[in-house]
Length: 487
Image (cartoon, rainbow, N blue to C red; front, side, top):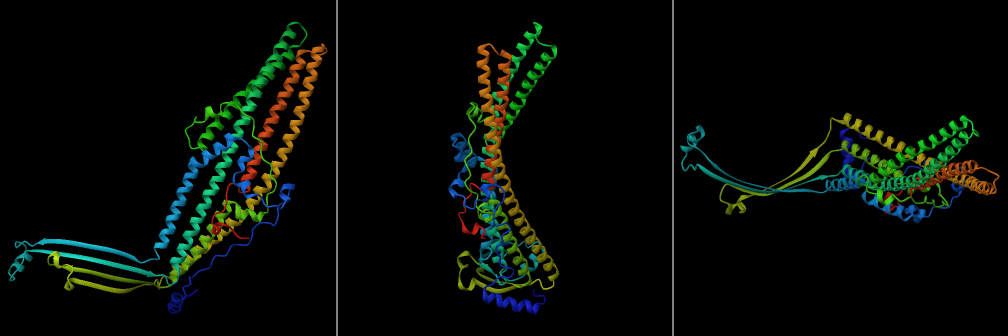
């Protein structure tokens, strides 16, 4: 790094003619992830994920209402509107950085009239002058231009940094879109699951109250102990207590959905009032490799582009070592006569100059600014590596969880089917007179508990699938190759 004026001036001259920019050129960091995933069978399959499958993964649930709600969320969500506004600001920053490299032109003009009183000291002196005119007029029109010569490339590095920030903001929009789509699907699945569980809970209340009525009747006949009645009362109260909790959770989920869709609370109550079955999550055939995430996940692209921006900011700081040269020109006309003589040859004026600004005795502060920029680059590099590690962690955990949740739901479904078969056998025995009505109600109670567990397991399985698709970067397609991270 040049530390003396003579060296800095010589380097500046060479830069002016070579067109180079000071500071480090950005190089994509080496891969911060492993070559392959570990854990489940799906993670070990190295087949690339189908881009179309990820771009609209929610359609794989085959639920038209879910698809409609996600479409509304992607067009109306207010977090997404903020991200889009931030991208527009970043785009304006790129335009401003580019404009700083171009010449600046301005046109100015003025017209003035004056009157000198003879009662003032100056007026008395001038009044003694022959042909003194107490009234006067002046006119002036000028066109000026200035251009800062980007000798060290500081302005080019400034634009490079602004462009990287804009690219990060565009990827940021994709990251928000992905989050909004996943959150909408997650809340929708919770709503359908809660509706199903609420219906089961209400049936459970009826069953428990039926058992309680039968037990009380037997108690009156001396065929059931008081402790049996108390136990039946406790079970009925427990069943009733589950209903308000489910209703409160359903209310919260409906409100959360309206917020995600950017609509007033209650806007979608009627649309979702009729319970519907839980959507079945699509299968995940492959997840690709960890390196694929670097090109696909928008949050990783955001981190990589911010690293590129921080690298360019080092060049901006280094450019302060070198002198700043600017060309200035003025062309105009000025006269104290009438406006008709303003543009005569005698009234024309022009000027040209070469400006120099050099922080010659401020290198200590420049050194500090460079060190600060390097520190910011190191921070951005660490943030990128951490984001890459967390992305692979998300995929490993979410895909494995999805597989385990699917297995759990299948096992509980099998148990529920067995209990339904047992209930059918109990009903047949009741008709033959070998079992009592209470035993049939107990069988109903077991079936309902298993059905509730099955709905909960299926809900969690669908939510795990949503998280898996989100972790894979679903819904994002790289349009600009400059936004992609190379291997």
